[in-house]
Image (cartoon, rainbow, N blue to C red; front, side):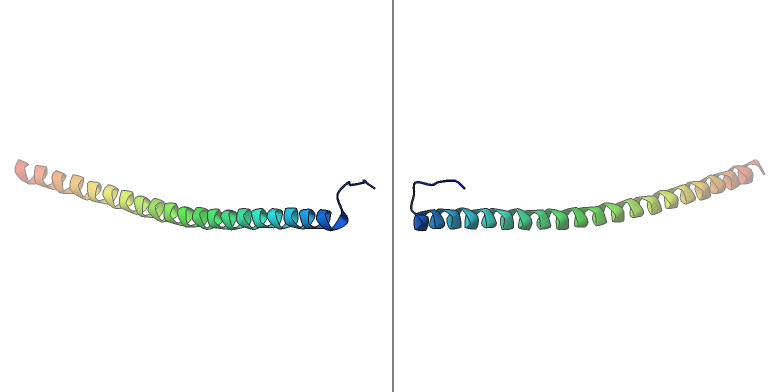
Length: 81
């Protein structure tokens, strides 16, 4: 065992203080990690929502472009008559 020069009561206070500081830092890290997890979850959810909406709008645009092409062809045909 290590021989310390300080008294056992002083060592006990120092070790206890060190332990408390370590616990406080660990709890703070844990809180930050949880907040980052929540942020990542929220951002992922938001990104997925915007991706889904974008795909739906792209499908709608393609559908409208097809309809516009068909209408344009009908107008061209009517002009020829």
